[in-house]
Amino acid sequence: EVQLVDSGGGLVQAGGSLRLSCVVSGFTSEDYTIGWFRQALGRERELISFFGSIDGSTYYADSVKGRFTISSDNGKNTVYLQMNSLKPEDTAVYYCAARTYSSSVSPAEKRTYNYWGQGTQVRVSS
Figure (cartoon, rainbow, N blue to C red):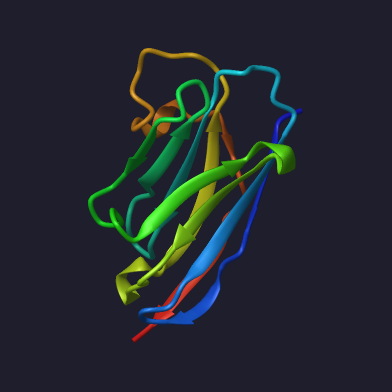
């Protein structure tokens, strides 16, 4: 059974940093994508970053480019999202998600992710 457990959220002042973790288990394929999404109050869940296992490709939304970094530690089965220079507008519930199959559809498509973590709250105060 595939499981994703995300953690690391909290309250931080603007300009501060947090590192989110997503511990994954139960993968049976070497070809998978891990994405980080966020959902602010009253807004749709949006993709902010993803990591592809086959080629190590990464993607960042314009809103976080240059501030957030996605990385993986295969030994710990964990994908991280390092968030620096946080802004109040980064306040949201953050979710990791996995697409555990090969697909020609872009990993930017939220609908293609078949497993989700429970979410971790990030609050950035001004």
